[in-house]
Image (cartoon, rainbow, N blue to C red):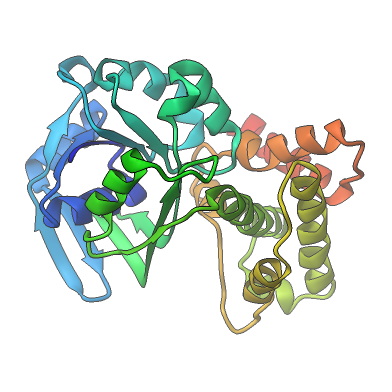
Length: 304
C-alpha cells in the first residue's frame, strides 16, 4: 500500500517506521527543519528494547507527486489547516485519510475539505516523545493503533487498510465501533490534560494532594456528561477502566499537552478543552472545572 505519513514526530515517526519496517511503501511528509534532520541522522527510534535507525522516504509539500492509497495525519491539531493544503495534491479518487489527532473537531474539518467518504477513524495509544536531537523515544512498550469506518461499516476499502496495518509490529485494533473508541480516548486525554495543566503536576502528585482526587473525579464527570450529550453511547466498563487508570496513585501520568506546556510550546487548548466547552454550551451543561482549566490555558497562551 502506498502510504503518506503526514508528520514525523513522536506518533508519525514511530508508527510510520513500523509500517516501513513491515514492508509498506511509506513516505513521510515533513517541514524543512525535520527534513534536514532526518536526511542527516535518519529516523531514530529509542524503544524499551533498544535503538533502531531507518533511512526514511521523505517529501515536502512542494515535492509531492502522485496519489496515495492511505494518508495518515499525525500532526498537532493546530497545524491541521496547513496540512489540508499540503496533502491536497496527494488525494486521489481512491485515497483514504486517517487522522490520528486529539479531540474530534478535525474529523468534520477533513470531511468538509475532502468529502465524508474519504475520512476514516483512527487513534493511537503510545507513550512517546521527541528527544533533543529529533529521535523518537518510546517510553513504555504500549503501541496500539485503532482504525475503522466512522459509520461502522468496514467495507472492502477498510479491509485493505487492515491488511496493510495489521502486520506492522504494533498492536492493531480493527474496530467496527471506532466512534466510541474516539470518544473514550478524548475522555481519557482531556481529563488527564485538564488536571495536569491546572495543577501543574503529574497524576501521582495530584492524587496525593488534598482535594486532588475530587478534582480528577469532578473533571472526569464533567467531560463524560458532555460527550454523552454529544452522542457517546456510554460503555460503563470502559469508562470505569479509564477512571481507574487515571486514579492510580502508584502510576504517575502526564499528557502531551502538559509536557508541551511545561516546555513553553504551543498547546492544543482549543481542540482538547475548548471544543468540550463549546459542546457543553450547546446542551446548557454546567462545567465550572473545565471552564477553570480553559481560562488557565488561555492565560498561558497569552503569556507565551
